Length: 201
Image (cartoon, rainbow, N blue to C red; front, side, top):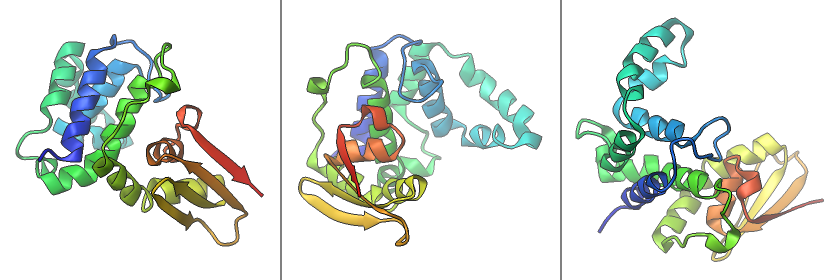
């Protein structure tokens, strides 16, 4: 049985293949090509990705990125679909699902929901296995981080899940409801694209 991360990688590669390199995404400042390059770098040269974030190593990071930056958009999308080499820890199913199920779900929606002709009626169905994984992972990551960032004690509710309350006890309460996948998008900073209801006291 294919893993949730593998299925979402396929969905991401398909979404990227259906738009132009300069198509918008929900990642601020990134077109589709930038997103594809990010995924390929994360898969194949995580050292370069880290180096570019460190001032003393940024030059080295840029040199390591140069061969990937020289690839065409179609080549980048093909490499997104191929995934990392066998040397990568994420080539193992358990690690891959942990690292990439939510990552690839979010980035697929970054492409799909940013297009001018997208409407909520086009929302793609996802499996219950992915929905459960998104909920379980996000209650430990995105949901908790969003509660701190928003400075509210947030109670998340989704059909078939929750409620779960996260955040500092001293913060004012708030309640957010929606499908799990939309709560994940909202909590990861895609508020404008997420179909949720937020209520504050």
